[in-house]
Length: 254
Image (cartoon, rainbow, N blue to C red):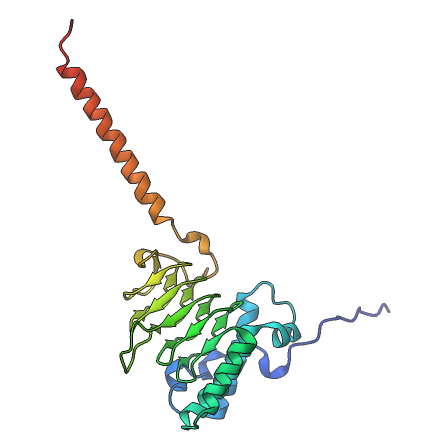
């Protein structure tokens, strides 16, 4: 009998294999003294979602060793646990070391749900009172920041399954609805409804897009500046034709 070839890939560790998400806590549940089992389940979901969202993720050991977004979330969850137990200095030190190691700065006071994927991650900043919902996708250079020195809730609240493109800035205590998409390089200063796309500087809500089944399909984001310019050019051409027709009608024949 011919022996089956042995796979060179290591199997996914048992604690990280796909499981039902019904027993995994949400961001609101993690906000108040999360139990150790909840933190472990959220961390497992953070690991699993990478294989679903990133086609370059081929091996679990590769993800464990080479994905700074995953490293940042692991260290954040430790710092967040200490922060909620009113441990002084240490949570901020962990956050600072995480920034030095990964290029990602997450304040220990921020609330991050399960299954969040920070892709590449360099330059990502998440403020103290920011809330990031479950299964959000955040690309490099994203800022979830405030707009001044106000106290209290001063950072954005992202719903579930939100996609934030590279270099986008979401500033202030504003809500971003479930399945919303923020275009790359946008600066968002106003609320974005669920299942809408915001692009531009400042960000404008332009359309509804299918982020539920194709969150990585950024080709759906239209070029609003090009559309506006084309509309203006078409209008100018129409007006020129009308002026030319009126000129010909009032020109006396020789």
